[in-house]
Length: 141
Image (cartoon, rainbow, N blue to C red; front, top):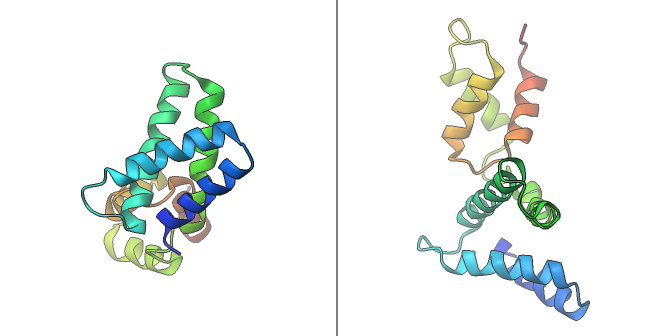
């Protein structure tokens, strides 16, 4: 099932169970997905979800705006993105990419490597998951 279809299905479930906040958040997400000009693929949907979550985190951290509401939105988004996060690229492919594209003699900094990998993935992965992969597979001092 495409991610978009799963979100639509979850919206119908939330409506049946009268989960008001979840209904509002899922409608917002679906509205944004439907505005995608690139088409509704899982990759585009995850990229959009990550963008929405980033804005919600900014609202919490920088503006202290609707903190509980934004936390709920982030939680809903994470339910969709964490399960699909690395479906486009496997852990072994990330490790292979790092070994082939990072000069450890120049840069032995996990944040630098995280940036290189995230740029390669075009933001279609949770940085926390990628950072964990980096920490588990490479040694830093």
